[in-house]
Length: 263
Length: 263
Image (cartoon, each protein chain N blue to C red):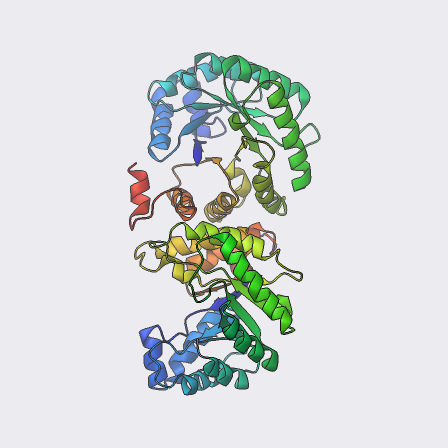
């Protein structure tokens, strides 16, 4: 499982404050903690309140790279913000993200080709997020086709069927589960699958943790290959480690949780 | 989800003692507690130490039926012990179980037909438990064919791909997960799927609970329709309820765990 840590995101107030005040230690602490708890990639998002997202992205990437060596997922709706990150990332980056809209895909896959980056593709377009597995797969297929057109290896494509909050779109969770399974069959080599887990439980105050970890294990059973989550959620990581154990990805021993963390 | 409570089983020392001493209150307490916590069926097994399993089965069924009204799963390797239960069960019973061996199936499906019972069919035969999904499906198909031969409705057949202890057969858990999905496609109406969950974590002392509940949610994601488990394991039931919510089987509300339990 490729674990993408979600915590360096200006959506969180303390991160926005750290960005605005250039408090490198706060960002670096979040980077170090997430990697320590199992993140293999860190998502970097300047957030909705950034006044100068291009400069903020540059500062974040430099600040994070000063303390950890993992690849970064450059998370922005603005192509120039992503490119600012791509210019200076030392490890191969992931662009987070493109939609299935042709104009956006042309920009993002162009960047991916130029900078040898991987790409997260969201199965949505200008009309919104589809309501069914079938429509998700149709958009996924369009993204795959465009990636191939740009000479992107389909293994470097992360397709995200988009988790919606359970409290507003309950029926969609099952559609996402089945989409995960079928996305893997779209092409060879199979694309990665991914989603932003926390989105599922937006607004579910007291049950967020159990909703997230239960869905994650169900998605792993359906072949999920990577996920954007909070790696500091210990119970969530326990569930992830156990689910992978049950799929025989790691060797069982009595202390398998500790063994995984000591790797 | 059809939840079959596993606790009335002579395998447990206190149950064997209660059976031997005819302590009805202990058995009835276990029956009431399991139903209260969500069991829709109770498994009844006199256990390996019973000196007179036929009389013990009769006493257990009468004792349980004096306090709860749920159907019973008559769990024995001996056909005469099962039949003793079938004679007196007031609700439609489940026979637990037949293997895929022809002689056993003829006896069990004969009983099922005579007493209008449902049947759990284990995908194993005299040579043991298969090592692959393919071999499990082959035995499942043989059980389905025999059930049809006896005029049993395939919806009344519970096919069990058999969970083995993770510490001795780790690779089999994933085979079971995929078997669950494909068993449902064997015939129309689809057979139920079931397994004894606790078997998975035999010998995994400190991790039993997380292994059981993680696998259960993964199996639910693969279409599991019923399960034999300990309904008094609160965290396990929380996981089950949440997994069903995520498949849109119950309506989301902020207090969905409480709401489910108050049904």
